[in-house]
Amino acid sequence: VGNLLRAVAVLRTPSPQIAELVSGYGETWSARILAGVLGKPFRFVDARDVLRVDAEPDPTVCGRVCWGPSGAALQKKLDEVDDNAALVITGYIASTADGAPTTLKRDGSDYSASIFGKLLGAAEVHIWTDVDGVLSADPRRVPEAFSLAEVTYEEAMELAYFGAKVLHPKTMLPAVELGIPLYIRNTFAPGKRGTRIGASCERQTMAGFTTVDGVACVTVRGSGMMGVPGVVARAAAALARVTISVRLMAQASSEQSIAFAVDSRRADEAAAVLEDAFERELRLSQVA
Image (cartoon, rainbow, N blue to C red; front, side, top):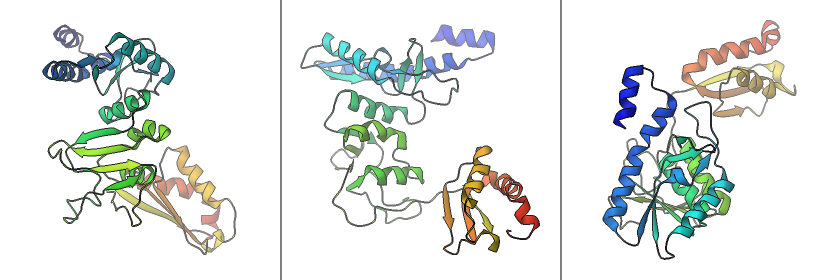
């Protein structure tokens, strides 16, 4: 590591490849220490030896998991250890198909747990964090928020997308594909059950609610929209052309208005784009 950092200091140009390699050392060191402390039958496994992902030109994007090569490499590793061995596998890190070290980016450690749960055909996956599970609301805003006993995959993904900080939606995808339940547990309160995330749950009430900051509402309205097909498609296509993501869309039953929830930092841009898309209707006072 020292040699790498000295090279960066001399060149004054830290490459993404070096950043990927160096940022993974913490995982390998901590996993080696843990395996050493636990002793037999625990065995250390470097995920870079088994987990393969596609190379991505964008250093901020996680490549897709190469399930076939990863499964084969993991099976080879399993064949090398005793049947009663328990594996301590690093999270967050992986290798590209050509063997270059990389990482799984944001929430990569939790993602690793779900990935290896699928590769190993696990009965369940436990993710240890610093909260008691998936909460019914943000405790900073709702002091009475409580830990939910169980939620479905769909509910957990919606909660995560709209602000819940427990899991990133991509974390759940490998487990969802095999129907593996995920348990969110508290490292500092191991006796608590936490939250079970699965294909179904017995709860009949609302799971919870979340809020998202930094969102603006841009509205297109006017009598000229009533009964006219394709208005929503035109608006959505115009926003998509400039890569503005629509978090939520609502249309009045009268079809006289459509509201789009977008990132507040791009609200003015979104309004300008929609004005261009409906320039003719604006000129004729059919929309506003």
